Image (cartoon, rainbow, N blue to C red; front, side, top):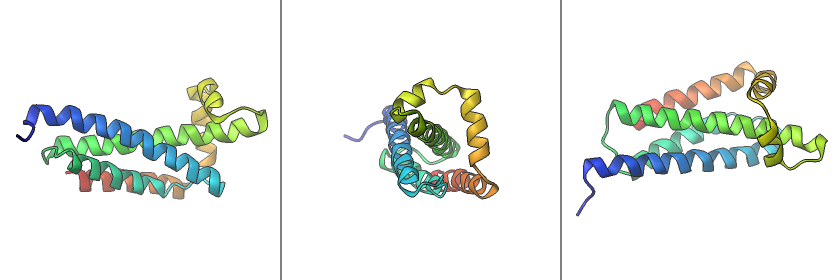
Length: 136
């Protein structure tokens, strides 16, 4: 028996949270490997969010588009935080997750603002738009 409409949304939200954290971890690894921001991964995060919503069989509409966009935004924020933390951890002799736990929001915002160019912001915007369009 297929799940009812009420049972689909918790599954979709759980998949989106796991997917956002997973794609953010992959994004951090790609950025560390390339020694660059790798902002094009925002589009990959958008494709992943749209795919996960379809996989969970969430009903099409505005809510699904909003959830896909929110999941992509979460991946962008977590990945940016992780990239900044990893860049700070290296010279301090810390592990990236130790640095991430000690990194404050104001410091992260400042460093992310310095590291991201207009092209990076355009990739973020493109990822959000793609997520909204493909998730609906």
